[in-house]
Length: 238
Image (cartoon, rainbow, N blue to C red; front, side, top):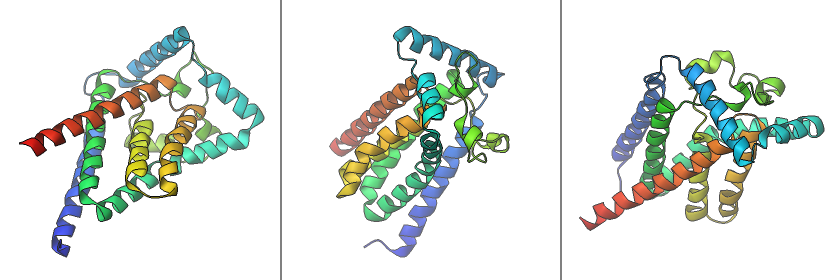
């Protein structure tokens, strides 16, 4: 049986890891490009051009229709974008930490590998959010319809405004979806399927991510699970 002192040390270690990861997220902004914002806008235009050439630049039409015909849906998606991200991540992490330390370590490792890949991409290829790209008619629905405190200028110092690709919002939702499906009972398994789909529409309808950001985020998830599974098997075999 694990003693209370051991549990406390483990919890403090995890908290320190999360704080370190957040510091790395902040520190890596602007390490490669002198004007990350300007580069992010240029790269955002490239994403727009690529999606247009591939025939699936659908986000402006989706948002325009929703704002004109179902504004309540957009407001709902604004809140879903916020309350189904960090609150769910923290609660799921805490429950899994208490329920199964081995599963917790596995999924935490997947998240950290995913974050490492995302931070490298953010540094090398910063991409602004769709609502900031002038060539597409998208608005920041959260700032337009609320809650306006989220993503406001006052919050800009606490996150990377040119980190749209890959979408960590989608990546971590998919990781949680896999966790819910494999580790939790009953309705949580269904939630594991619904959660990423709901996130997809919330991040695109609010103008925060392009579909390519989502595809990049999903690809990063597959690679992250693959890396952790390979390392886990090699450690078990050694």
